[in-house]
Image (cartoon, rainbow, N blue to C red):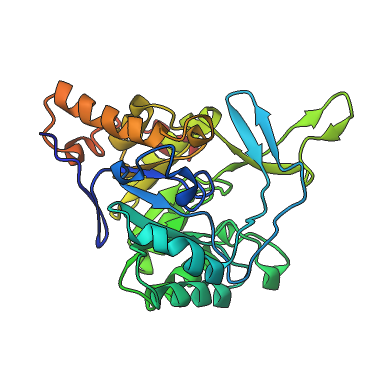
Length: 314
């Protein structure tokens, strides 16, 4: 029997497969489509202090091997989440990770503190790809100092796992991983979406109302793998790999380069049971290769001795 448990700081996942924020609703939407208890956990749709309508449509566009989205963090707000969604989530045997979004550091703290007053949340994933209204709209996640400050402020508010979700839209993602690790983050999840754009040649207009959006799906997987590998060489805390995972083989690639767990995102729009199938596929792979525990393969891919290719372009 393959041991599939993995540790993310103080949080024990029964297997390394999570569903990514924004791709699985709040979990209850998919209850009739898949047994969510087979997953390692659910990462909720982003939660802000107050409800958000998000960006005007069109805000999703299909692209070759992926999709663009500019949802604008639309969500029901933390109070409605506690009233209407948390009761279902409390009954699950998989982990429940609340994704938090905000436009100020104080708002991040307020949302986390409110969730700390409830039961049913096992960990927090902090979405730092949000506009900092006090700094002219610049994303928190592209400012290493601000990302570290968010981590420091949130760390003292909870004993549960704090996971920082890092954006790839920076020069060196390893610098951000080191910064949040130094401030007490239990783990990092990466990568968030890559800035992209699509144009309708018939109307000569952007396909998204916001012009640009976040690119996800298989098209970004090679980039995500390289970023996870970079961060795995830089920090000791666990990494949750995200980016174009469609099959168990895709997920195993992330584990091999250093991720302790993975998140399945865009695949859920095609098949809500993708995460469960990937979970089973990872266990099958381990059995076939006589691996007794999933943790044995984590980080087993390393550059040959003396290889400087990675360092040359990072």
